[in-house]
Image 1 (cartoon, rainbow, N blue to C red):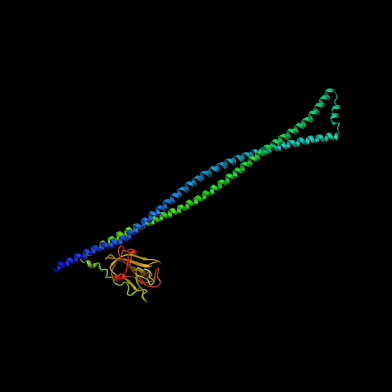
Image 2: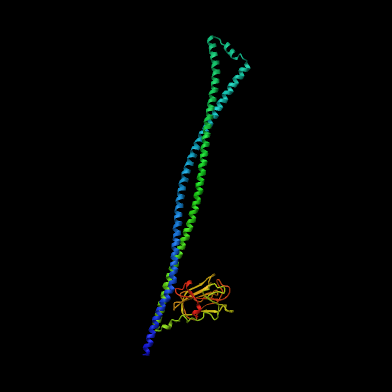
Length: 393
């Protein structure tokens, strides 16, 4: 009868271990799942930002393409104006050559006329009369008179013709110069607009580069969050494997007490000291924990208050500083904070025993002096689930 009772007791304890193991896994994975959900929310937010950046980039690229088309159009017009100006320069050069030739002809003819007038003046007013009187016959007289008359008329008409041609060439040259000036002004205006468009295009290209950088940064954040989720999945699988291994070990040994099952009031003190600050500070502000901070506590060993699995073991430069969270088999969580730098002796996923040293008392993070900040949390072990540790010590 006694053997049967012990056997039944062993079976009951084994069932309790299995249930508690599942409870630890459930409460531990709850935190991880909550973290995954938070990551997924962030992924959606970042993805939304990424889509907005892509839309802005696409619109800016479209604007750059439109600016390029306008710049090409203006450049084409500028090239055409350059061709017209080149043609006008050629015409102006030709006109200048004609003008120079007309000026040269006019000058030569004027010099001949002036020479003839001088000669006539020096010979006296009877010069033409002498020519006529020197005629030997009536026919010769008429011929000489006609020649003298024609010579004077031709001189006058030639000078007038050359002067008219000179004026026409000068007028044509002036018109060409005016046209060239108009084209040059138009070209300068178009070049100014083209320069403004080019500057705008450069600014848009800078915006594209900036948006591309933001796009890469956001994509990197999404990948980091996805990587964090994959890491969480790995942690959950590892925790599940660890729980299953603990179950098998208990079954194989036939003794459920291989995994300690302390009650909620079975915690030991985490450090050999006494409480100096309770759930509320002297100011009345809520503390949510107790502090062990007696003199000489610096460097004292910190112990796990009960068997469990380490959920977190991190070293921060702020807040908790060096801290550890342990999930216990009774569904509770304990947190140990402000540990001495470099003193953390456990890692996430590790199984710990009651009384095992996990770190040393220090003053890292948001701390004004060496002490142990100790919290107890109920499932699912979040910051909002803190309860009075004195109920369990």
